[in-house]
Length: 253
Figure 1 (tube, rainbow, N blue to C red):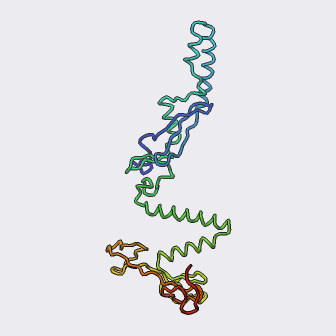
Figure 2 (cartoon, one colour):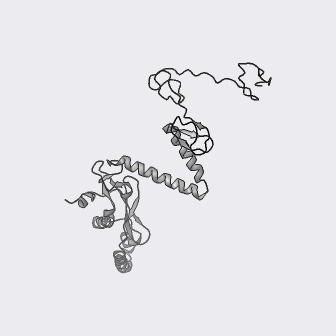
Figure 3 (tube, rainbow, N blue to C red):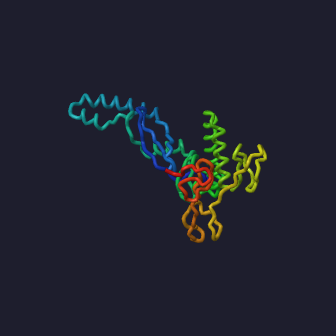
C-alpha cells in the first residue's frame, strides 16, 4: 500500500443531505472542526426524473380514483432530501480526497486539522509542538500587521520587548527602552540608567515566588517589609511622623 493510499479514509465522516432547489446533495463534515465539504447535485438525473414524473403524473390524474394518490407517491426530485446508497457513495467520491483519517484517534479530518508531513491529525502529530509554535508566530504576525496599519507598531514592539525582558530577566533602559544583560548599569545606546529585573525571591531557597505569600518550591512563608513612608515634598523618610522631619510638610490626610 502506498503512502497516498494510506491517507484515504476507510469510512465516511458525518454527513447530511440538503437541497437548494436543484436536487439533493451531500454535505460532509470534518470530525475535528466541523468544516463543510459539499458534493454537487446530479442535475441530469433530476431533470430526467422530473420529465418522467410529469408524464406519469399527468396520465394518472386522468383517472379520478387514483389521481391524488399518485401525486402523493411521486415526490418532486427538485426538493427531495434523500439520496440512495449509490448516490451517496458518488457524492463521497467527489470530496473524499480532501479528507484524511488519523491512525491514532481514527477521526476523519480536513486539511486544516491534518499534518501531511507526519501523517497524523494536528492533535496527535509528533510535530504538535512545532505546529503550535508556527500557529503562534502566524497569529503574532497578524497582530503586528494590524498594529502597523493603525500606526501602533512601535507600541506593540515595546510591549513585546518588555514582556520578553520580564521573562528573561534582563535589564532595560528607563530612557529609550533598550534591553541588555542583567547587571548592565548604563544603556549602550543612550547612556541612560538601566533598570534591573526585579525578582521576588524566596529568602530560603531563592525561587521567584512572583508575589505569593508562600514559596511554591519549599513552602516557606514570605515575610515582606512594608515600604517606608516618604515625604511627598522632599522624599525624606517620615518614620511614622505626621510631619516631615526634613521640611515640615504634613504627611497623610
